[in-house]
Image (cartoon, rainbow, N blue to C red; front, side, top):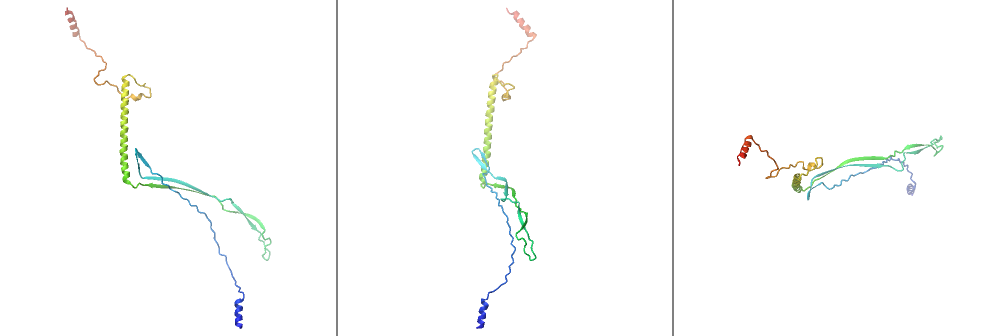
Length: 224
């Protein structure tokens, strides 16, 4: 019976435990991350127009860029005042003036405005996949350019022939620009000559000799 009571008292008695805890150091870090992205938007490629059709070839597009960022905090406080308390104590270690502030010392916060400037270059290369079509377009473009040059030569010939005809007709009539006129050079290279089958007005000198004169006088005397 005694053993049962002792066992009950053992389990029913309050237990006392000694617990010691040590605070582990805690490190806190803070920061900010700014993500910047540059978007490259492909635009329309270079197109070369030849008359009624156009050709497009390989193109290289280079785009330089500059980006800036600015970061700051509001309200801005460069310093804050930290209280310095009275730590004087008596012989037993009790503070004499608990909570008494002796003075405030300024502490720099480290708050600042951040600036950043970033630059770079983006490049885009556009290559047509249908090379056979591009080559055919280039051949057609060469023929179109040759045709345009021939048309220009024909128009130039018509212009020069009309200028020659009009200048010649005016020169035959004795009409021309004044030598100091700014348009005198229009007909400066036109040369007026006699048309085929016509003779210009001219005179000839007839040579005579003494024998011919005496023969003519004798013939006049012998005539009745």
